[in-house]
Structure formats: structure tokens, C-alpha cells
Image (tube, rainbow, N blue to C red; front, side):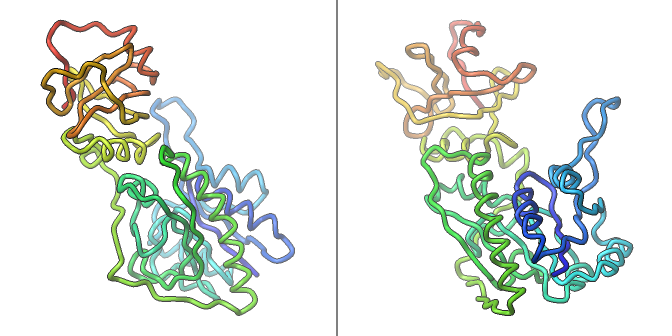
Amino acid sequence: MRIIFMGTPDFAVPSLQAIAAEKSDFDIVLVVTGKDKPRKSKHAVAEPSAVKEAAVALGLPLYEVDDVTDPVFAHTVAECRPDVIVVAAFRILPPAVYEQAAQGAFNLHASLLPAYRGAAPINWTLIKGEQETGVTTFFLQQRVDTGTVILQEKTLIAPDENAAELARRLSVIGAGVVVKTLHLIASGSVTVSAQDEALASRAPKLTRDNTRIQWALPVAEIHNFIRGLALKPTAWTTFEGKTMKIFRAAPGEVSSDNFSASPGMVRVSQGKLFAKGGDGWIELLSLQLEGRKPMEAGEFLRGYRHDSEPSIFV
């Protein structure tokens, strides 16, 4: 079976490696990924994608693309005569590209579709406090993340698991599901099911606006928000006029909590850093103040000086 694999970030690498490991059944005729990202320093070498690095290590043919709607790209895909196109964490493909696959093009999505359709399913799954998630393979069609489902695999979410940790687990689970999907297609034994539109939910792109912490929310929701955005792009707030990123936090209790505190108010208790949520306190464990390195809260407190007025996050 001739396969084109398309992906860019770390999440896609285990799937590429798993397909490549089954050389007797699957021939990867092309790996498609995004072009190298320029680094912040203009003198630094551009950063290759995780999939590019994996493809080079595996000795696979590679094609880097910026614009997937460019007719040259569709022509390149057609010339490879793929039986199947496998997509994992890549761009939204036009029909002119995915319809080149003789036996179909399918995507690996990091949710149990139709839940959390969109660009950031892992993040929103955690932000919404879900206790279970999984991966889905589905055949591509023009409306994003709406194609017929081939396979799904579920997994429970640990109470403190963050987005980076969950992404690593789902990438490995997903690799196994991708290989199973390919074997089903190769044997002609695929059965599919339509997604139930009544159960659909969204996982929109993460932006500066929707990653800001709202301190008036209940503590449990703030906790889920922070772990759902860790370690990238990271939940953030403003502290004394500077951006502060919060990487890790946990619901907590402040000793002698006998004063009136507004949401976002900061308190140090027994050498620990707390912030007031809508219904209690949350302990901040790991953070980064603008202009400084990431650090544990204890290190931050040792170097922090403030006046007698209470500080507050906004």
C-alpha cells in the first residue's frame, strides 16, 4: 500500500514511526510537513518540524509546504499515486489534495468525535473538565472534522494531567489506531459510522484573549483551565503590570482565611503562593513573570518584594 503521511508537530511522530515500522505492508512514498519555522534570533538556523526530523531519521522522502491550496502541491501528491493519505495534526486540506488517494484519506483527531472538533481538542477537553477522552480516525470530507468515523479508542484522564502529558499519551494511542485503520483499509474490511451532529462540540484555536485566566470562576474551573493550557500556549494573567504565565496550580486552602478577598487577590501563606478564585483559593505552583525565567512558586517568592498593599491578578 502506497502511503503519503502528512503532519507537523510531536503529536504526529509516533504515527509516522509506527507506519514506517511495518515496511512489509506499507510503503511511505512521501512525508509532507510544514516548512522550517524561523527562530526569534535572525542569525539562528530555522527550526525544522518534529515530523521533518523524524522523516529524515527514517530516510523517508520529504516535501515541505506552506500553501496546501497551491496547485503545485496537489500535482506533487497526484504524482505519488497514493493509495491512502494519512493526516495527523496538519493543515486543512482541499479536496484537490485528499481526493488523490485511491482508497481514501483519513485524519487522526485527538478527541472522541464529534466532541471537540477544531484546532485544539486536547486543550479544550481538559479546560472543560472531561474525565475521559480518546482518539478518532475518520475519512476526510470538505467540512472540517465531520467525516465518517473509522475507529476510536478511549482513555481516562488523570485529575492533574496537563495538556502536554495528555498529548504525549494520545500520540502513542493514536499511532496504534492509525496502523489498525490502515490494515482495515488494506483488507477492504472498513466499516464507518456517521457522526451525530447533536453531540458535536467545538475546540477553537487558542488565542491571547481566550487563554487569559478569569479569576472569578470557581477554583476547579481555574485549575482545569491552567492544566488545559500547560505547557503551551500557557494560561496567563497580569501581575503588577506584567504578564505572568501560570504553568501549574492546585486547589488549596489558606490558613486563617478570615479576611475579605476579591477574585484574583494574592496571598502568601506558610511560604506558599495563593490566588483567590470565585469560590476559594488556588495554590500557584509553577509560573513565569514577564522578563524572567520559568520557576517554582517558592523561588519566585524568595526573590519577590512588595509593599504593604495587597497584590492582585487581573
